[in-house]
Image (cartoon, rainbow, N blue to C red):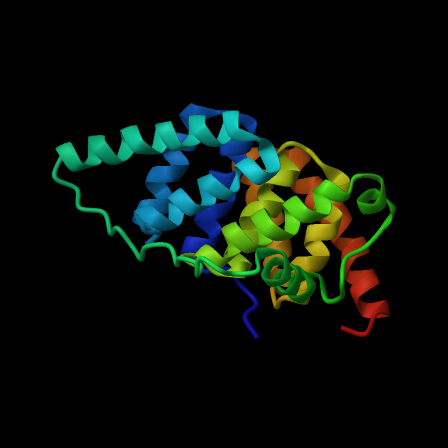
Length: 215
């Protein structure tokens, strides 16, 4: 089992965090580092597209425009960045609610239900059909890399309740405690102490919960 993050995984963390908090100057630097670390153009696009599901369209669009300008600038200087794979397309007759539900259950480790979805049933549909089906089935980046981006976004916002849930997801899908502590350390040193400490504090609780569940 891996105990450290790869160079490309390390690069995802500040990209997602700076995109979430709207710091375009530092985002541009992080994007350049990500490309140098081996992230493809399409992989970074995917991180910034997924961002909108957690931080909204304005942050996502701003981040994508920052990245577009950087890619064009690098191209004009003769730098050839790897494009990477294209997104997978769903069949026209796909049952997106069923597909998304299976992906969500796999990530969380159990079917997701609760009073919030009874109070606002549309959220259950949007999460399953759009986030977990439309977005996650595009592939390009792995579920682990998507979750690393997600916890970085949620720490930067901050959104503690959702961050706690996604840290448990990270552990459930195979990211190790040491990798997540490394992610928190990267947030502390490269983004903000507050974001890094939030991950560290909530990770202690997430590890305890997962151990009690026997995972």
